[in-house]
Structure formats: structure tokens, C-alpha cells
Length: 169
Image 1 (cartoon, rainbow, N blue to C red):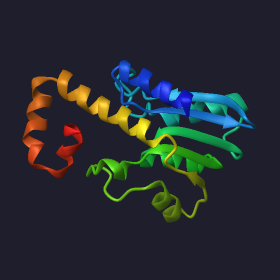
Image 2 (cartoon, one colour):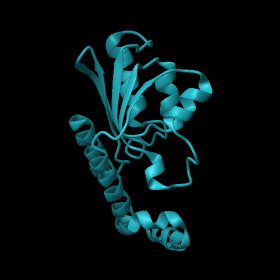
Image 3 (cartoon, rainbow, N blue to C red):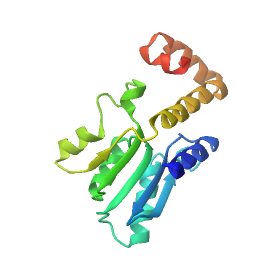
């Protein structure tokens, strides 16, 4: 998780969302990724997808059974579907979406998507959770401070919503 956190910080410094990911196979790091959505102008350039692509290339196969994926943030539904499709054996994650009480993903969870699709995935949660959450909060606060006047207006307008408390940490 050390490397994933370092990648998440790199992503944040580059203006991307603070997510980092490392793929481990047979005890060795075979691939890594960090969010590059903004810097690559690619809405699919999430840390997990980039790491899965690199792992498949490095291992020479799309069946990633036996692979453990470490990530600082719970994978979004797109990334979760990709790791389920690739048959990743284990997911180790830090922070979870439910902790941020955002409305964007509703009641989504990795477990829910896996159950809905009938796929199996060993899941370990809460690894270095506080550090992962703090990085996310720092990125959110930075986006408020450095955002455009339109961004700040939107955030101020939303101040009455319950999720606003995450900016006032």
C-alpha cells in the first residue's frame, strides 16, 4: 500500500484524482497505475484500469487469476467490473465511497457489484484507511481552494447539502 499511496499523491500533484494502484503476482509488483483522467484527458484513465492493462500486458494474458490488486480508493463500478472480468483474485483497498457520504454512487459497493454479477473476489478493506481518506480530503480541499470561480460557486451553492461537511473537516 506504500507504493499505491505514493502513486495517489503523484496523481493529486498532477491535478488528477488521488488514486493509486499496484498489482502483485506471486509476491512481486507486476504493474501499477495512478489516476490520469485530467492529465491524459481520458475519462477512463483510472488507476485500476491502467494497472490492469499493464498487468495483462506484462503477464501476457487477460485472465489475471492469482493477482492481488492494492488500491487507495474503492474501485468505481467501471473499474470493479474490469477487475471482476479479469478474474483478479484479491482486492485490498483503503478508503471506501460510503465513508464520504457522496451521492454520486448511491449504495454502490464492490461486494454489491460482485454479488449482482455472481462473481467472486476476496476482499480486504480498511488498509491504511485514515491515510487514504486524508489524501482524498486534501484533494477535495485543494480543488475548492484552487478551483475556478464557477467551481467555488457550485460548492457554495451546495453548502446546504449533507456532503458539504467533508469539506469542513
